[in-house]
Length: 296
Image (cartoon, rainbow, N blue to C red):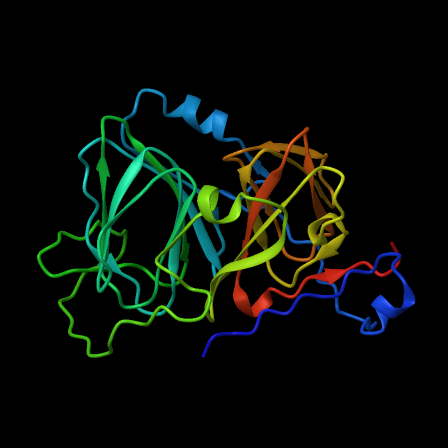
C-alpha cells in the first residue's frame, strides 16, 4: 500500500477564508542530529567533478543514513553497461545529470534518458543502464540503505565486505507502476514549463521525492522554516537555491549540488539568482511530514 504523503499547511498571512483549514498542534521536535560521514550539509557538483576529473567511471556516496536512504553520484564511461539488478522491497530512482543512458527495465520498452530525466524502478523489477554516445553519463541515484541489490542470474555480484552471496529463488511478481509512479519524467519537457508549487514524482512505503519550481520572489513551502522527523536532502534540478540549516552557515547551491539536512533541524530553502529554480527533495516516506514553525 502506498503511504500517504502529508504536507503541513503554510502558516502565512493570507485572508481568513484561506486559513479556515489551518490547524495548530505541538510536535515533539527531535534533538538536532549531527552530520555523520559521508553526510555533509553541502556537496558541490563542481568539487566532485574536479576530484574525479581524470576518471571516466567513478562513484561517490553523498548520503548514507543507517536506516534511511543512500544517495550516490555515479559516472559511467561511454559503452559501459551496469550490472542487471533489482531491489526487493522499495523503489529506486535516479536523475540524469549529464550524458545519455539507455535504460532497460523489466516490462518496459527500453528508452534513452538524457539530462533532467528522473527514472524510477519499482521493487522486484530487474533493470540495467548502458552509456550511449561519446561522452560519459553522470547520474544521481537514490536507494534504500537496508535494501541491497539482488543480481540477476548470470551477473557477477559486486563484492560486499562481510557478506557472501547465495543463489536464491523468488516468486513475487514485479511491483507495478501505478498512481504518480512512471518509468520516467523528463524534467525539462514535462515540468520546466512554469512554476510548480510541489509535485510528487516518486512515492512508495519507503521513499518520497517531490519537485518544486519557482522564481526567486515566490513564497514556497520549502522557504518556510520547518523540520522533519527524519533526515532529508535536496538535489538542485535547475538554477540556484539558497538554504538555511540550523547550526550551519547559509548555503548557496547550484544546479547538480546536493544539500542534506539531519533529522530535527530547522531549515528552509528558497529560489535564488535571477531565473527559475527547481529542486527535488527526498526523504523516507514514513517521515515526510513537514512541520512548519507557527511562530514565523
